Image (cartoon, rainbow, N blue to C red):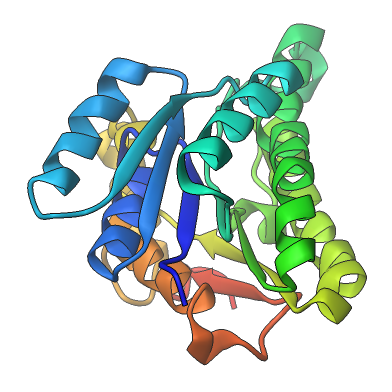
Length: 244
């Protein structure tokens, strides 16, 4: 069987970059996708130095035409996309009473609609091959809520609903659809938080530490593997126990 190809969105940093690295070192060909081609090239070069087959494609997840063009380009390079990791996400935090429409729309379009349209683009190939793995990166806040993040929480909760619906729809084609719900992870997105808030989150986490991007990447690597072939429609919590 030819080597399988994985496409990871938001792959230029943080969780996405860790996922791309974990999959590349496990023998998959990896397409790294994000808005910034320069940052993607930097991430891809470190993988190529270790012998990985990688391809970089610039995609704006808030733009369905950009998604279609980017995934078409990637599929032409590697033949088809066997694995999709929907990781790209943005935040535009604010209290609901004052949240601007543009901030609501941007977050939902990128995090939820962008993931859906990326799935639509890879499905024809997966259905023809009768094999596929889709992993949506949700969040612990999708399960427990978070003040000041109505848009982000709604988008990540929507991913869980999307995951379960597609698992029903695609199971007969041997395509699994699962979600990973990270807890408090040390990434650029959390770097700007105050030390006080970080410590508060750590205190609330039974394992008493922040998670790492590699913790999430390990869960993704398992869910796309043959060992996880009988798992679909599942939300895997990787949160240190902060929500059970």
